[in-house]
Amino acid sequence: MILLISSIIVIIVLKKLIDSFELEIKDNLDLLTFSSKMATIGELSGSVAHEINSPLMAITAYFTSIKRQISKDLINKELVLEKIEKGQETVSKINKIITGIRSFSTMSSTQPFKPVNLSKVINDAIDLSIYKAKKNRVMIINNCPEDKYLIHCHDVQIIQVFVNLLNNSIDATAKLNDKWIKIEVFELVNFIKISFIDSGLGLTKNVEEKILKTFFTTKEYGKGTGLGLSISKRIIEQHKGTLTYSGANINTTFDVLLPK
Image (tube, rainbow, N blue to C red; front, side, top):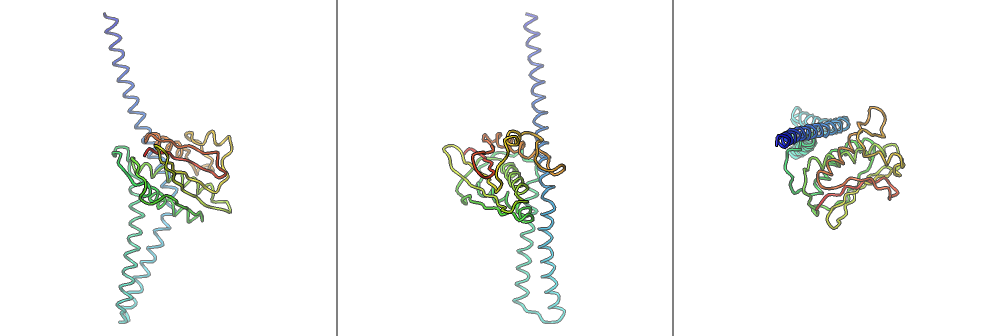
């Protein structure tokens, strides 16, 4: 009897320890996810700063033009209104950039899953990556139909995965003569497959075996954390899907499968 009671106590203690360890592991994985996200934002920051600086200079030019007209008493009402409208459009563009980065930088593990339009998620990811793509003259081709597919997800986490995949492709193709990334979407029986295909000619067998492992990176020292793909894989698996490298294609391809 005493042995049975002791065993029960040991089991209860072990259960509490396991629960504690699971919570600690989850917290650490959430921090890794957040760290990976911050590293991505750091990589994007230079391009984004340039993208914001350009419209700010345009707004300054609009105001200078209006000020010049007022100082010379040569106010052209239609021209002034045109400059004001362009200024407002430019402010909206800056706001969109900042809103995208702010949303992307938040911790999203506590947010509930919700139905999200896949095309919007892809477009949001492209909006965050387009500055880096422009800087490296990489063309992004999005072949996802608008408003056709719904996925049940943490939208910010899926955007993080897509941004990681886009950024990796931009880095991989930046020095090629032919620079492009295609996003193709296929409807399967129970899943939606999102393929990220770039103009690279695939991975070597050695790299393919390690590419989704934590801290493995093919980037130069100081330019990659090795967290992006491994964290992305974990996020997709939490969504009951898969992230895999497809060696069957001529071009470098990563496939994301998400439940309908």
